[in-house]
Image 1 (cartoon, rainbow, N blue to C red):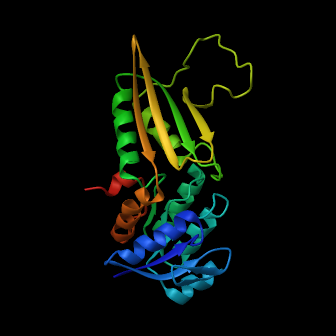
Image 2: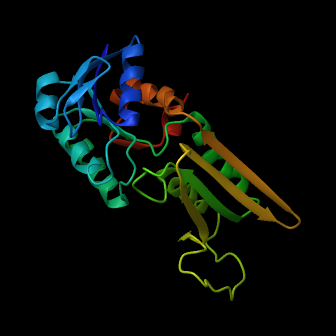
Image 3: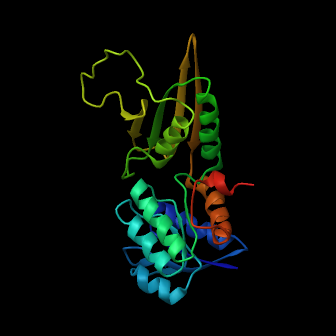
Amino acid sequence: MIKVLVNGALGRMGRTVIAAVKADAELELVGAVDIFSGEVDGVKVETDLAAALEKFKPEVMVDFTRPDAVFSNVMLALSKKVSPVVGTTGLSEKNLAEIRAAAEENSTPAFVAPNFALGAVLMMLMAQKVAKYMPEVEIIELHHDKKLDAPSGTAELTAKMISEVRAAHKQGHPDEKERLAHVRGADYDGIRIHSVRLPGYVAHQEVIFGGLGQTLTIRHDSTGRDSFMPGVVLACKKVRALTGLTVGLDKILD
């Protein structure tokens, strides 16, 4: 049994993770933490992460909290030799470099995934393959209106993967002008990223490729938070066998 602590337990993702961990025969939920006290699924929720890590001595900490808190949570877990499995987005490249160094220094593996849904991982891999042949591309990501960061980690990673096989270049008319600031979206090596935040959405993304007389769209939709749970559970089971920092669910798929 792998001992798991869930941080961000009272959030929508946290509650779903707790149910998934409790339902899996190879995982044991030993603790739950949130900035608010309470109870979820019969489990008392602690408010002090450092004290909870000492009290429950988990092997894995699943973090679905906030972009402004995730880095310190991860560094704290690593200092206690607890492996973080992170679904919170907002970590910068500098953050990831520091996490990598801390994981190596503490001989404690860490895992970060912008998206735990298998379909989202396949979408990114397919987009990278298509970009070799159709380099004109834009990304539209759509999330619920309570999401705190934009663009999504999935959109940013998708752009990064595409840029690895596509030369950076400006898209659209060379003399185009934005009559409203940022109407063309964010610019990642010439790849435009557009973020939508509306009630009714969960997590969705489409990657649109354009070519002479044709377009190709790859789209993924998570219609419920349970779509992320198989990936979270898999990461909890595999993280302790990894080394250093691993980023991306695709790295642990068989």
